[in-house]
Image 1 (cartoon, rainbow, N blue to C red):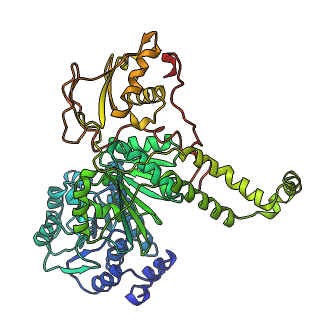
Image 2 (tube, rainbow, N blue to C red):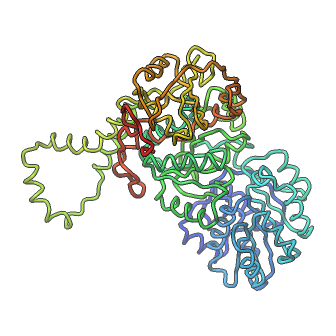
Image 3 (cartoon, one colour):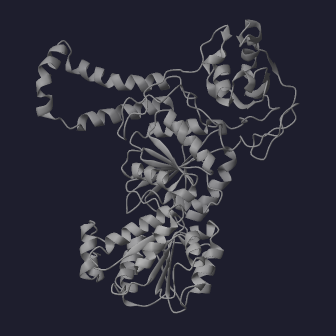
Length: 601
């Protein structure tokens, strides 16, 4: 069904045509005719990316009186990103409506400017609950004239703790208003809002409650927690044209993963609540322009990300609330396009996968983390595809061709092809030729002391020697010529440290005692720790060693650092997304010497 068939007025139809919209999505086909003709409350269930803003924005605008400068419609959204996105979209829909005005009210921006916008007069306000409450308490906004209240992403607003704020805001609006509630999932709290503030609402749905999109593939990889970041890099390299969002649980983890990706040569950046509004806007501008290949974000910060052509959503950790999985994956497979949702999990998360399958009514496919050969093959054929389709600027290159032909005249066509391909392929082959298998092996234990597979060791080096977790890991692994992933659960104290390794490598480390290795004129000594670890809740905590504090975490969040754990910086000479952030970094780490100086750190 076209927008013209939906009965839009000429101003709205012209604006929609300018935006390139032709065929209405299922939720738009249901809501626009209904809300344009009938004054009713509405509960609409639709997945993210199905065109919900137009579904409520167009019928709302068709009933706006542009000659009246009072607030006639209020749109509530959970985050500032979504609030700004809605404002921009509605502004585009109403650009031919002379006298129409909309403003966004959200935290992180100057409130005095927002108050001035309200005083100048606008018909529509898009707001986050917290800032709107502030405006109400300052008596800077009057909601008595509101005819429509739209709750967009209502489930997420309740998940974020806005229940009391919503109650306060809705109590400030007229009883005879129409309330339109849009949600991707329908938990009990959303149903409570509908019962309390809506009058016999119509119910529309483009799918079953909480069900995932049909054009979205759900995949998961099982790894040990210390290999989570390596698996993320492996997945990114396996999909050379990836344009995705990586979801983390916390702001700290989000920033950490983004920093590591940048350090390893990926075009990535972080989006979380600790960033200023200008920083968030800058990051989103880069992501929308595809300067960024991967955006690392928290659940809250990612709300309202309306970016076309996102190919992958990667769950670095599964969400605490399994219903949030629907919101995360709604960032891809939008507007009828396909997408891939990937979860990187540890064995203990298997139950959550089953819970999510039950909620979204879709099955996950368990896959092996790509090995080095898989990645090299994908990169090779991606390069071939780009060479085949590259645009040739004949006029610009013409003057250089005679010299080029002369330089390459002794090479056959086959030799030329091999050499051009090898120039880029050799980088990934060198990087991945000895890449470890990251897939979890049943029966393996991820850092649990007391099992014959892992052993905990003491080393007489610590913070006073200039070490941190990352530098000590690199130092120890380089000293015994092992991969950095074989040094894990590192705990650096003031003058000593503890770490774990697989039991079969214990002798490799203890052999360092007889090699007279010194650091800052102090002989390095290692020994097996005789204190046993106690399993923490997250699978990696321990207590008991003299002088140690209780260390929590580790089991589920992966280790910090990791820029060299898969062989060095990522071997990317150039790429499809933005500028080069660094090519192949080689082995890196520390040189093996009989004496180490502090200056190396």
